[in-house]
Image (tube, rainbow, N blue to C red; front, side):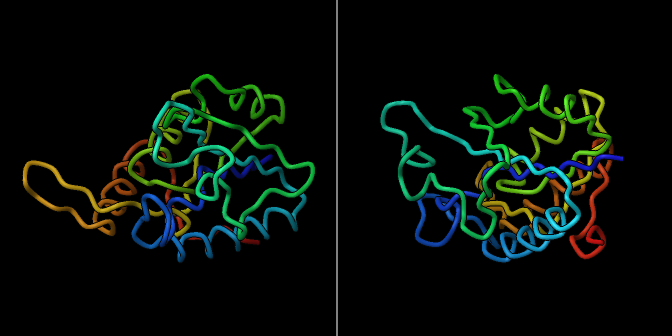
Length: 180
């Protein structure tokens, strides 16, 4: 069984001082680092996904800016694959599907930012493509959102998206349950 860890957009703009800080981003990055260390210790594959906003006037995740950089706690090592993307779904117009198929992935383990956007889109796409998917809930974070005059706290946003993914797209677990 080849479990491949896919780290989605754990980039500096999502942390305090960045362009779009998420609720619980630092805690999620710390848990992501634990999972990444376990994956590396097992000699298992890791794919880093980095969002690159290239449209004029983009205010965040711009390549070559500090906010666009992958957080140091989960930074890629030499030889680890980095997949740049321009859409929430990490499979759209990227080589991610081919990379996972080429590595004979039997399970895709997804972590990252934002639970309510790129993690959600990537997990649903992976499931639709036939992969068994697991999400480490405590290695993901979400923003505060608002809709129809109602403010939804980031913790509630995160919980709602994890519940929705667990209802039909992925196994949702905690990092401590996934490490060797």
